[in-house]
Length: 170
Image 1: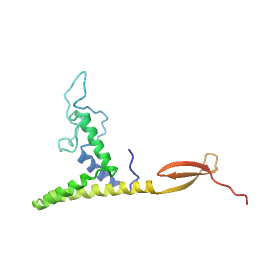
Image 2 (image 1 turned 30 degrees about the vertical axis):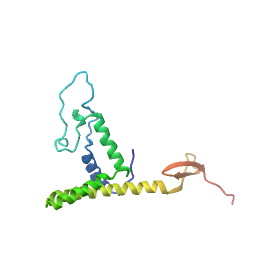
Image 3 (image 1 turned 180 degrees about the horizontal axis):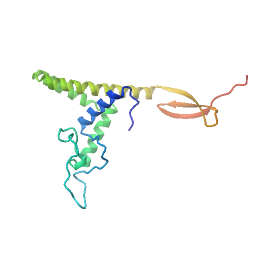
């Protein structure tokens, strides 16, 4: 899936990092994933390669600490959030924030507020882009490889047609 472009690269990185942490998704460069339900010919003892698992911010697929189904479920949940189809995360964070404030756990409430603000901003950005893709159609003029002007007809963020630009004899 591709969501974007979103302005504010630094803020976007922070929001995506928070989203990864909430859903326990990996962000490490190691491409090897082992799942607890995966059969292996020569099983070996593995440990998580980073501190994120110990902090509860990653399911630990690098060490086989979760099943493939559990990890896939978290990926589906994150996609549903980014698509705007499941915003229960924002609702639950807001409720947790109010409970923490009511219990006079102000530092926890502030952390939850900051997390909620980052994810709400991310949701707003992705929703804005989805609306533009859905609602705007336009013609994009360009030149082909021979230097002739052509038009790209864009509808729903996809090229619907390509045609040579009309010419008039004047």
